[in-house]
Length: 162
View 1: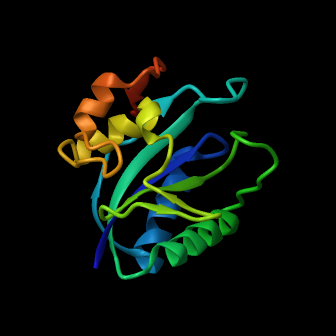
View 2: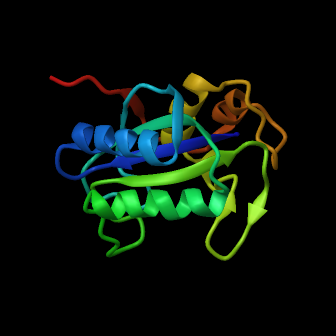
């Protein structure tokens, strides 16, 4: 079994419901969720003229190989209504593979670890919540150190429903 870290995010519709549905599908089709971070809200990154995102990181124990994980999470996104119109555009759900054990993988469709995770507070904050001492296999640093060094200045706040 492999330890997989996934980032869930979305900024359209009922964001908490879409994250919940994604978690349920991941648990039934990818593997057992061992840990999950809280929910965090962040202004959009990259393409900023859109609603704020909700994000969450999951630690999943899976028997699936990385390419099968990618196919499965892409299918989950599509089933939940994800449409890919523009890079970094608004979406109901986005599921990214952050880490798969300590694997380093570069294919045409998949890069592990996620190539930009160390540059994004909205990824690092929930990741550090559940795995602060995890070492990035390419950069050779603990995630907590990467968060301290992160150049991203977007505010990431704990989300609480009103």
